[in-house]
Length: 197
Image 1 (cartoon, rainbow, N blue to C red):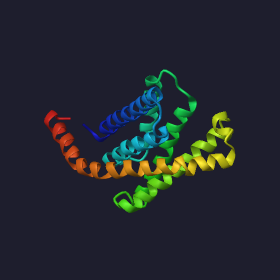
Image 2: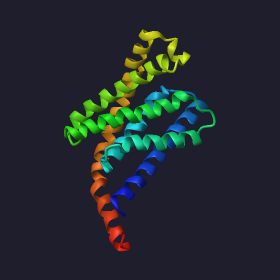
Image 3: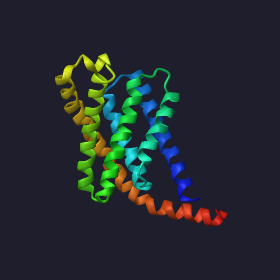
Image 4: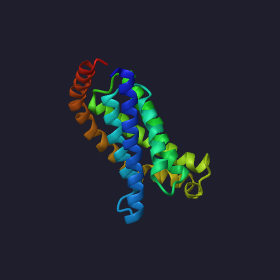
């Protein structure tokens, strides 16, 4: 299997996993009630999946493409869907694509402390971008009614808990991806040579 095929397969797999996880989380939390804010769970899952994916296939643009696939899966997986749910997912993919690409450019990906700072910054950036765009670009009344102060309170209140959850997701994903990266590459190379691909 050549690199292009592996990349396409990886994007489809991780996009499906992320979109399916988002749909299942939203549906289940709506059914049983939210013990903790939904955004905290979603950010943890997103950073776990996307960090793992980026370390396993460190191709620029892959995180954004995974987000595009995830949007499609999420649309198919939820009976009731709000535009903000899709915007949140795609916005997170864009922010993390920028974060991972910059980290790769400046050789930070293998430095856990530096990457931890990148992840925290990207989580806060995502929360601020999402809340303010929903209020002032998309005119979503649920966010607009909070006012600028309320949006900042949410971004640094619930958003801080979500950022820590995202950091935890990353902290699980990074060593796990390092552990499987080389064996996975050897496995796909062995299968390719066995089948003459």
